[in-house]
Image (cartoon, each protein chain N blue to C red):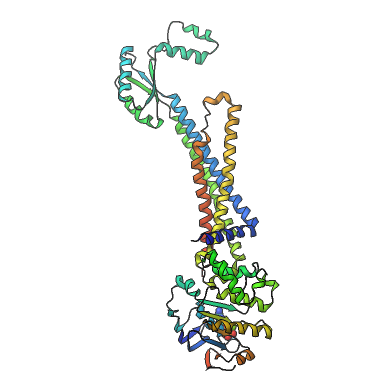
Length: 224
Length: 304
Ligand SMILES: Nc1ncnc2c1ncn2[C@@H]1O[C@H](COP(=O)(O)OP(=O)(O)O)[C@@H](O)[C@H]1O
Ligand SMILES: [Mg+2]
């Protein structure tokens, strides 16, 4: 469960990126976070990832109090989250298989574990036939699937997606959303930041809308 | 740590080196230069010490006695010394006045023995009977001399330490010279390694950012760079070590062949006598330099 209470984030000077945010996301939920550009959506994601410090308020993710999380415990904490971004952030010099295996390798997983779980994950995201391809040989949608596979390979409790379809055509975007939905049905909490109206409207999920750093709407089966 | 993880870090370290081969080569070369210099210095110092040592033990300590003393009394004192200092003495020779004179003649007049004939039966070295003592350990010389000087009937104790003293100051000058060059080279080495690591980190910027998001331990993020530094350092040590090994043997052979006449004075230590220490020092310095400089650089560069 993610609990956010009275969260405020000020970057510099007195400009507030987030103001008194209160939000509870239950385990296994699928939540859209929408809002105009500059409204503070990515800031919220960064706070959840502990990439940036919150200014005031309280944020707990599965019983981890982020305000009190020690620096040296950040890596372990991050392993419990998966993230994907608009720009995929794949390793260009490594093929699909290696990109996914990388996430396990760098947390010290065994070779056997990697050989077992990577092919399974590639099958789940529908890329098992392209495991030897390099990122530049893939479409945007396929690249995002690799990024999702990488985010999921360490079995995170929560998947954070910051504008995952921002660089994709509508059809690829639709497919990625369906994949995220499938992942959510298997029990992972999924939080998707987007400003795609059609997708949000079609998925009929909980929608939280932020405007100028404030939550202005929070509806089940909401619309943009 | 798992074998797989270790191999992964090792591989990434090698990838770092290959990606950035010119910087890596430059770093290795400068480390090699440092260590080569150090090995040379070490070889020279050790050999000088060894030569001084051999020279001093061959020269021995000479004891002259009061002229009034009869030969029997001198021999008696000799026995006392032999008995009291048995543990330190390798060899002890009695040189009678006649023998001293004969040696002197051969040494100074050589083939022109006729020149010495002028002295005929009149031994100018009468009263110069002496004992010559060769020690097992030259380090015990000072103590031995002090002991001998206290003995009654002993007129003079001759021993050589100006060779040692002279060479000690020579060593000091040599050490300062080498030290200065070494310090400059080391500074350049630190600078180059640090730069190499910085460039490698630049190459991996995106990757490191992704690693951090995935939750890779800091150790994992730094490992490739530390491995890189370590390899540069160890290779940088291995090259001069190999070179010095052959060079040293060549030199010893060459000098033996060219200056065979001096073989009594120029006595090189056999390679196996100095190589283990040289190997230890070099690998520690090379590996340590690579490890420390890369660790510090990467820690600063990737500060979260
Ligand atoms: N690192 C930063 N330093 C200063 N201001 C920032 C930083 N990141 C974001 N901001 C500001 O915070 C506000 C919210 O940004 P962001 O969370 O990226 O919005 P969104 O993702 O909704 O487009 C913006 O006004 C942006 O300029
Ligand atoms: Mg954003």
